[in-house]
Amino acid sequence: MVFGREQTAVRSPKGTILVAGATGGTGKRVVRQLQQRNYRVKVLVRSIERARPLLGDVVEYYEGDITIPESLKPELMKGVQAVICCTGTRVQPVGGDTSDRAKYYQGVKFYQPEIAESTPEAVECQGIKNLLAVATQPLKTAPAEMFLFDFANPDDDLQATWGAVDDVVMGGISESGIRFGNDAAIFAGNVSTANSGGFASVRTRNFTPPLNLSGFEGIQLRVRGDGKRYKFIARCEGKWDGLSYCSSFDTVYNTWQTVRIPFTHLIPVFRAKTVKDAGSFDPSCTYSMQLMLSKFEYDGELNPQFQAGSFRLQIDSIKAYGGATTPKWVMVSSAGVTRPGRPGLNLAEEPPAVRMNEMLGGILTWKLRGEEVVHSSGLPYTIVRPCALTEQPGDKPLYCEQGDTLKGQVSRESIARLCVEALERPEACNKTFEVREEDESGEMCWDNLFAGLQVDGR
Image (cartoon, rainbow, N blue to C red; front, side, top):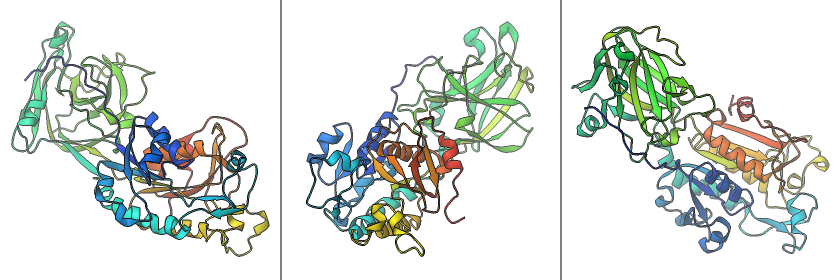
């Protein structure tokens, strides 16, 4: 089968993220951050009627209360890939809110606080248990790898998906095809450099809808080759002759190999020339895949393993791999959770939440218990412990530590952005840390922030 040109597919959003505590100061900013990055967003709220004016109509609503387990049904997690938990005990100034509320939230003016609704035990610990009980099973069963094409067990759909795209489209005379047997597919043919040709390939039709592989690290090929160098190619747009993302791999003659290609290693290319300002590959909208034998490497460089003539590449499978490394549970806790009762602690130098922990129903103590529930859940997680939260614009770099001694302030906007970054980065997995803002504005390097933190328990 030889493919012709196809219509551009519609770009699909990334996966669905559940935000609990979505109407709070940090939660509503998390929702906005996720939407800006093209995620679908489901929100858990106690009242849809009250939440809609804050969050609008472009989120999926689920009405429930983490302190009432029977309100959390399995359908809450339908289609959800990860959870960002921004729930917390509602604290207000004694006597209720005031006309000077803005200063209270900026951390500029302090009021005597009191618990407004449910107890810290019910929200910070039991509520987390309740939410995890309904969330754990579907998130745990998310695969570490996922078959995209199982060529060892071909079916009619598989055979209709793949077809040849050779240099005849540019005037060459190379010929290739893909044949499906009982134990593997065989990409084989004859490649010629006549008429300025020099490539043969097989390619999928555009996926409808495009594949969302945002929860994975890369592509894994199981192949047996002929000693030649091949290319794996993927596209995150639906144009037939548009930008592609490529990675070359060498084969060993008549030897089965497992080839792993991280998405971050894919090179943006247009007609064998790199496109330096194209940005990285977006696995959330994978439109097509292709295998190629080409005379050219990139930017006019020749393939050092290329020989004109016959070739043969067996393919057992193509998988997405690395699905277990990305945090599936991101939780906003609080700096200071381990300080109440710590020997030698000078309470006069601690923030109000630490000094008033017992007065506020042990709020920090119960937050720590909630963290412990997450630690023991078996889910990959990130626990963020912000210092005093403010309404500042969030234009300053963040500073993180572990050990729970950090003090300072941090913008809710920055914490929302941090939660979404943690969700997408494997290096944030299974880490708990405190965070504050630096004093001066500047650029934020997320890679360095997460990489410098230790995995919990090490």
